[in-house]
Amino acid sequence: MPQQHCYDLVYRHGLAVADDGATLLMASTSGGVWMSDNAGDSWHTLSTTMPPVYAACFA
Image (tube, rainbow, N blue to C red; front, side, top):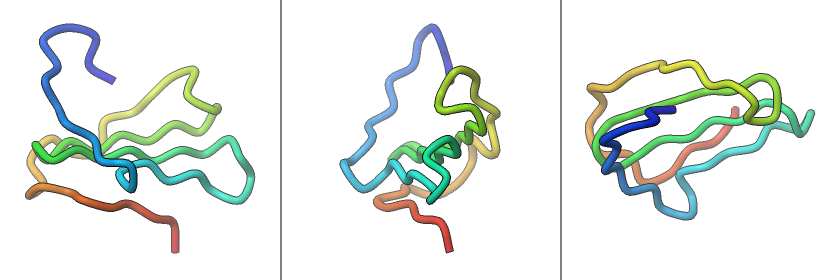
């Protein structure tokens, strides 16, 4: 997750929690998508160039 100068807006449905409870996916209206596989202790940037994301889910 960006630690400075982050002005992303995340809607309520922009966060998804996998069945294991530790894998998280968060997406923002400015096109950022991040994933954590350790319950949010650390995050990996998947994209910063997506179109606005209004909902995220695991399939």
